[in-house]
Length: 458
Image (cartoon, rainbow, N blue to C red; front, side, top):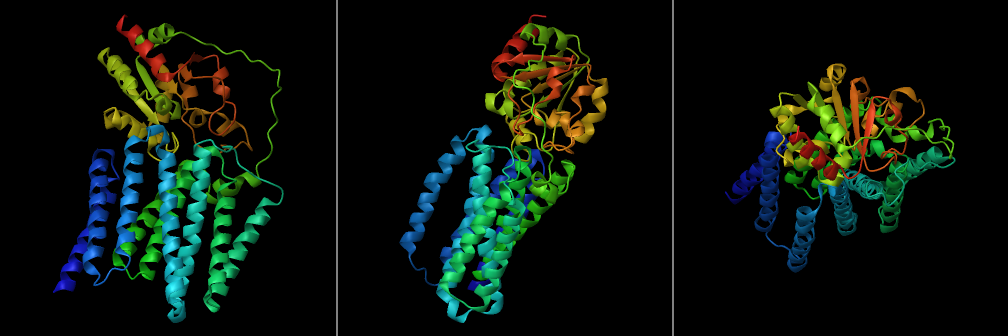
């Protein structure tokens, strides 16, 4: 009877995970889905303490949970929306690394009586967990701009990556055939190295896809560790994360207009771009908030294109105020959302939801692109790479082949930027020099506040 009760409680936690994933599929239910997932995880953790007849090192376990809460809760509550992708990358990496460490400990504890299947799952967990950990650290460094956001390539890089992968596979066979501590530690080290080499060639614009892929890796690692620990709940949770992450990665790669292999290793085949002359000065047209307000006031349709600059300035509430003001004047307003706008999947959706922007006003790329020809003003707020025509006109550039928001089809373009600095992909945007483009320099929130004030006076 006791085992039946525990099984039913475990099943309940599994159902909560499934309902959480379902809730996260839509912005209106995402908050509820997140809470359901947290509840499922809490039930699963508590269940472990009652299900096991004897728990060793209870003090260490409780201390670890307390430490995790002390670090995780303040980090999640205080993190700015601009830094959310970095936090996701770190949390994801920690999950993969934890699963790998658990597998190593179980291996050291039961290496003498392991079955072949147990060894294979252990090896898989160590490899994928270590790759997820080190790869996620590199994505964090790129997102935080602690290292270059450009693809990092070096002579013979693809052969080094291939050799490292071959070494990982070779040592994996060694671990299965000849159990011992040294082979497993060598395997972990090589896997960590492969994770770094795996992510280095990825350019800034493609980092969101890699985050999704590494998230899928972590899910698969957790599922495999579930087999190692004989935990059905871990298998369920890991499989859900792995499957959903894989589907999301595939959809994002399609949205970027390239294969996953091209996203990961395209930098090795990209043609070098000619550098612009250092002393070349090209004219741009800049305007004042009053100029922008007048242009918006006489428009019939306005499309707002948010990007990372909007998140940096925390201008989402001001954007909502501006949009509401335009709508009150009878102007048709929509938000054009690129699949990888910002630094992670759904970044802009979450940011705008925080400002209570009606979901019905958000238009995905395929939906909004045909309407730019009938748009009087497209106002781009810190979204550089996802509107850059180089994706269609410049073969060999880091974003070539990526579908973009075709704001260039609009009658007028307003570009809010702090400076002429290139976007996250590190390439110049020819749209800035288009005669139809007016640049409004400065902090996005401060600039939009002045535009709103000017609109109220018209």
